[in-house]
Image (cartoon, rainbow, N blue to C red; front, side, top):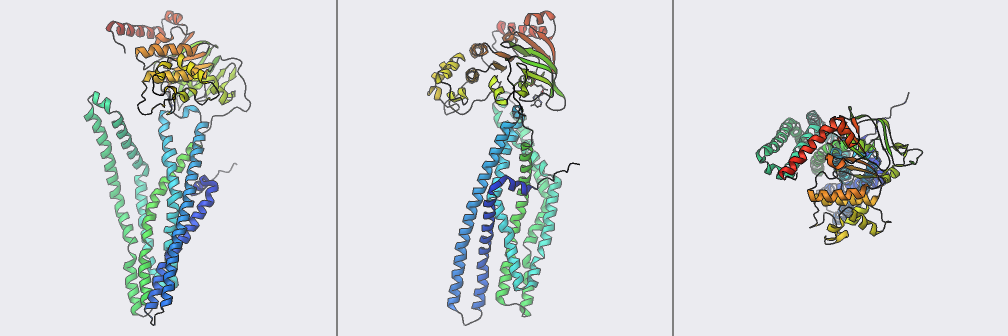
Length: 589
Ligand SMILES: Nc1ncnc2c1ncn2[C@@H]1O[C@H](COP(=O)(O)OP(=O)(O)OP(=O)(O)O)[C@@H](O)[C@H]1O
């Protein structure tokens, strides 16, 4: 039987993230330990000076000697803690860099479809907040907690050497404090940290939506309704936190009382022993200082408990991301004989129920295949399966007779140009946005692509022409202009297969005309898969595939499909009716 690997503890996992920087962390911890020990010396010296002052004749040179010891200890402490801080920060930022690089590499190896609108928010959160918490832990919390543990250990250890009975008395509040903090944690656990973060996330989400959607809210005069949602989420969060605080407050209060309790036990015990002649005044002073001081770090440690839970949750989210299976690269790569595309009985599910089922069709090389159908019918899913955004659950997708999973991923990417509805422009120059990291091609080709995409004119009218940084101050491109730069990018890439997803969807008439011209240049001599809601743009396609609920229900040329009198002909009728309404009324929508 295969043995089940025990999951690593969060602390070990954290150290494994640190890798070779463990030595820096160990160095920082050791130096903090020495620094804490040195911080303890002044208390010891106070005791020795009091002993000296209370037993004349007073030796002045001894007092001076002790003063120098305190001075050296203080300087030593500053030096050790300074070096420890440098080491812990070096380890922390290096680890932060390492984890972020690993995560970004991982994202690069994941199936492309993984990063979509739904997942990108949580992935961003992992790469920023969760990783930053690990950085904070290594840079600050770890050394702070070493100091927080060692101070009481040194203090109690030293008190035991002076008088073990009073040292024991000073320990009485510790078990009480531990019981109280355990109860507080259990109560907050019952209430669930998850519920707390859910309420916080919901509130933050609604605040962001409220601010972003303000123009829509105002235009539709929905301020009151929208504000109600916002205020409801804030009050839900407030009620949750108040109830939570009420439940945890007694145990937390008990904990802070216990932490401040030692004096209650130590003072009467010291007085009793002093009266009996068991201890001296300097010893009594030492117990009062150390016995009441060491518990101060326990408050810090209690807060650290909450932080540690957030860190462990973050580590499990990082691990969950790192363990998502990568896009499988083929062991032996094959080269397609041409750029025809074929789907054979393909089924694909994102979750349980299939998004597309038993899809079979062939798109011959250098022809245009249009996918039409209602929203959610599976058009984008089919398009995304070709460049392996996801891998089919069943069936085979091939290019030029080769299964797409047998083509080297980089080569597959080189073969396919993709224009999404919401393609992304980077905060870089227009030239870089068109090139997308292909420095070997001459600048003339960038200009030629921009000209073909009907973008050259407006680019030249910008202050820095092709060097204009997109998104820089004063550079605002309209949706249609952005779309034309994206088309220029795809024309420049010159891939033999082009997938076009709703490229003209949001354009105004002038832009639509220009975008259509750009698309015509892009599509020349390519194998094209085109998704369009405007049927007029695909009437000349070589093949139109009509989808409904993830299945192909009709397939053929425009005229043949019209004659079939099925779903496509009904869609065409309503499209024509809408167009004639638009022209008759002079509308442009
Ligand atoms: N990333 C995803 N995770 C889970 N389900 C998804 C995902 N993307 C799409 N779906 C679901 O798969 C089905 C097909 O969606 P798809 O986007 O392919 O349809 P579509 O025809 O392109 O729709 P539209 O015209 O609205 O873009 C829908 O039910 C959709 O909700």
